[in-house]
Length: 303
Image 1: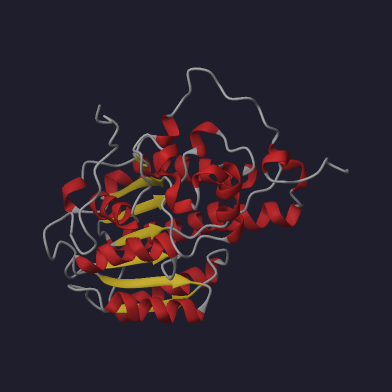
Image 2: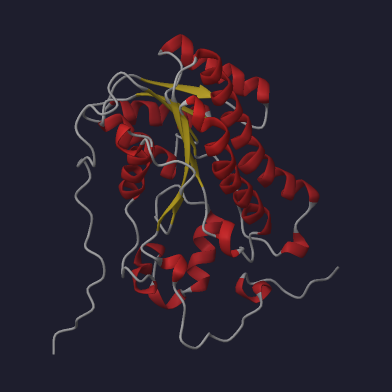
């Protein structure tokens, strides 16, 4: 008998666009963390639709390489890069100044930059906690605040997309620092949608599932491998997803371009999860509990 399990169909090929060509022509899109990974994949889909791009990050070499790659995307507008530590509000203001001088006030802000690594809560140092929360939550707030203030002052509409995480709802054992920060990011979406909606500024969240990419940190990739060593590489974890496949980074980019587009103007204060329903997966009988320290390959807590 033929196996009835096929999972969700594969997405259209890389290079396909989810919106009409030129949807973002003449618009400026600023993407934090746009030099690598999912941030770069999101930026590529805005570029494909004609946007002028500003990618921001902390590493010059990565930004330069990404700038060249994004400028070569068919349909792309102009592309520039800005070095920025989003934890510093003065540097944030400078990025917006640079974007304005190059192309004009950004019409769209994608808050993708974040920090994360797996760690038992009892092992988190004060510096580790601050590093993740300051980048993921406070940095997102500084970028959002600067974008909002400039649009409020100019009387122009704008759109913000915050990249979130499903453990903002569920909690995230092993990621207490990031889960707490992402819960704050999600709350900003819901709060500012009401505050700034009357001024024409929409804000939404976008939560990725498992989207393997070359820039995944060794900690995250190693954790995924340890969690399911029987299924091979991270890219083969489809059997552990209801979709029976992992996501393609372009699928996240398509979702971001929709949420910020003219076709989603009445969508605000919403967080869209793009993970093939994985975060809602439940077993009929729960598996045996394995303490987090064992999952991460750590010995007993020594105090």
